[in-house]
Length: 371
Image (cartoon, rainbow, N blue to C red; front, top):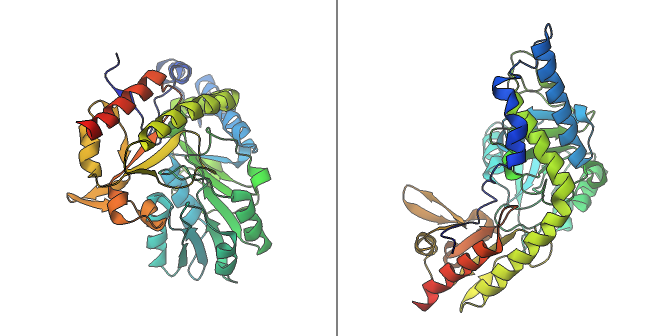
């Protein structure tokens, strides 16, 4: 009988052993700097980076020269927003975004940029008409998350980008939770800029990318050497980039079958937990990722429940600051009362989740309501 279960894959995923194997030579055997152009060590590293850039681009249907490597999605989001917006511009996003969008937006608001944070419906979806009404003559950028990290809610990105482009406005999406879990094709979806990260798709931490459609001008946040087409300077993390590329290649090959298997496990978990008296699903059943369920256990202290699940790694839909539990801003934005938001847990499955882990988790949670 297993003794623990990892169901927090939306926080981070384990690095696939095949990715690790691909990376290992670039630590001590092929250790050249990809910017060293005068010898074979540098050429070898640059070739590896070029190949990885092609793998990353191929997963999302982009051109390799539209991929800028960053330290992760948080940096990519900051680069997209701060590299495009200037004083007097109007920026639109929505209330259920990750803090990697909302915090930079708050900062930009203090620097003369007009920020609109749009409300969502009870299922977490942004209404098309809400975006239509918000766009003005000064709107420069719209940023809407593709798939929510807490509920898995998938926004109608193609429809939103179409409205955005009809007003000659650029469209950015934080696709950190979506890329590698569902098909993402930037041209079909009408995306101008897109942030995503390696460690959400079984690659290493500390590496991500910003897709920038050809012709979109983004000013650098980090200068000093002109790396990444002058958009993001700094010595390239070759081992991590190689791992990121391999992770993208594996996702492209295995994503469809993987999603089917995970969806079955998620539904088994969800149905079992929703049979508990007072349990309810946060968000809609449709338009969501196959690996996530967010469940409120009415009348229960969520933090206490979380701590009682010894051996089960899940997340509470809230943030703890100075020992004060605050309800999840995502769930509150969906109209979920504070008490229910504070009693909610997010379960997120992944490539290596087993049925034994699901059974173990069901048993652990149900025990808390029968003892």
